Length: 254
Image (cartoon, rainbow, N blue to C red):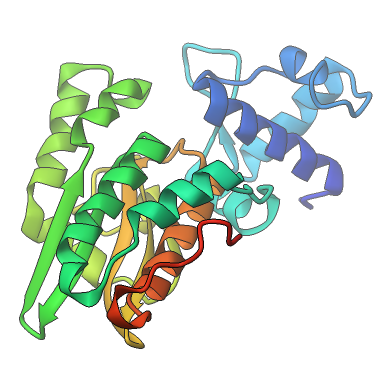
């Protein structure tokens, strides 16, 4: 079965709706929103095909569909629109990340806290001190309570236990390749809670990779916003620690 342009547009709309609303997406409501001039019956048939292809699943209590890990991977790789930070967001990030090499640890803590605040997810930063010593800073662990995936005590406890196991989480982060990396659900190591996604990007000091900045949260996260914010923050970390003597960049810079 082929992933036609129509199927891709329908899948993109389903994923976008589910990310925003956290509710299974039905054919009738989708027909009024995507503007393809398709009837609910036609969309329902396409959704059935997408389910058969492994991109959607059908919760037993709902007539709507929910994206699978495979769907999110396609979305991240091909379908999501790029999120553009506005000037206020950029300026806020640049101001928070002004520093010099002697203030790296404090700056990383502030960067991690700001990342958690902007994305409403649990964030982290790692800093390599030497070949055997790595620091991990975690922020915003209680922000997961804002997400319906962790609405029960059991779900919340399971997530908090995972991130509280610093050695396990740090190991999973350190093993990741350099650059921007998005791992979704079952793509993560088995020690990471099912239904979780991790997004990281590396940052550098004087041209040497020193650590990673990222978030961990439900697979239903705003990937476009999250990846854009993390990339912008790590780019600014690179710039901050490339400047000699802690010289500050111009606030008006894009």
